[in-house]
Image (cartoon, rainbow, N blue to C red; front, side):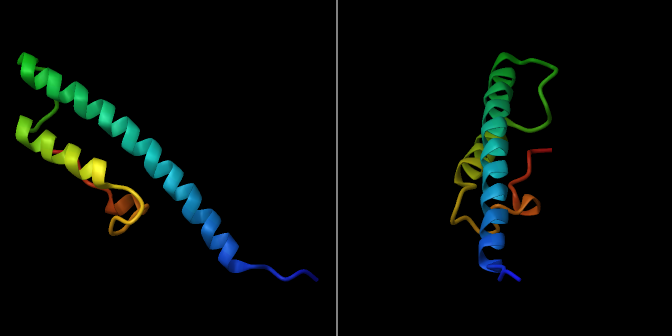
Length: 82
């Protein structure tokens, strides 16, 4: 019978979560850029939120990385302006 190193199992789960968090972050940064352009252009199809709210959100998303409180827990991610 082999011994299971549970610390390695936890690390793999963390690594997978961190990779998903980075992919989420990249997608959100693209969305934020689109929203800021839409707001600047006065596009009525822009999502809710002011320019300042989207810029503040961008700062939060950029800070969402290893070392951030709750990273990479999906439930602890910054939330979009509403």
